[in-house]
Image (cartoon, rainbow, N blue to C red; front, side, top):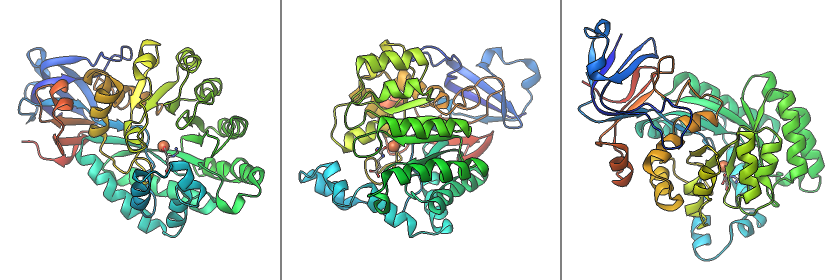
Length: 408
Ligand code: NIG
Ligand code: FE
């Protein structure tokens, strides 16, 4: 039964409640067996039965549950650096999309890649994410937008879950936008999603969730309702992109559909916050997308004070968030969303796991949870997120196996 000793500061995130309750223990130890945590607590209280077990040395560092990135668009073809520069020169995100760029341009580049090429690219990204201490990644389809291409993306995620370095949770985002070939028949595309794509995804067991981008430029609330209701019938619970570019009652919609999470929320209203809190929907904030689109941040303080569990994720995608650096997004959540480092850590671990329906399994270190952890070169959480570095993660383990770095 391996154990991790000499932990300067352990954040267990074992308490489901309290955005800033990260279960801090100074001078701690962690014990696991067969990939599952058996014991976590102060080193001086280590039960005698574990004392003789082989120990790895955390060198007095900070140990956290492996980070959970609860919102990414991991597999895609090409990049859109030109659009980044175009926006800096004053062109709008939606203007670029209307001219055939944006999501549609990534759809063209993604359809051109076969499964192996998509797998290789996504695996490289995942290796980078694993080195940052991320051990669980939610990944959306949504750049295929036809039956075969959507299935191809989701099959890539299933294969990645098997080989790692991280666990994968897949979401079908066939309702990302109406693809160009269906522009004259959006009703036909909604039917393709509800009658062919979602059933095929469910049949192959390729996703846990379905997602809809609810926005004037994408899908209406009524279309989203139809798609999510079909998803629910098929066992695919909704997660929604809402209130990102305009406020349209998206949070209220997510709450009424029993969504597990409502993501983005830059334009969420007070009524939307109340609806999320009452329905227990996790609010997933995506500081990198807000940064790249130069938007005012979502009202994270009002969400937390209103009783919403807030998560922080990367939104990694080639358009609005071309970086998978979740720790950078976490520092941004402190600086721009006025969340404390402890609140942000809870948002990238336990609350992120809740946004994936995996709370208690990943995103916390307590008896019975996965032995997924990261060793961070920092005395505490505050110092880690304040002193942003390219990578402060010394080592990371998935199921008790070191997948990045070295421990002695
Ligand atoms: O989460 N909002 C919709 N989807 C992505 C952006 C996708 C893209 O621009 O390629 C997002 O921001
Ligand atoms: Fe997104």
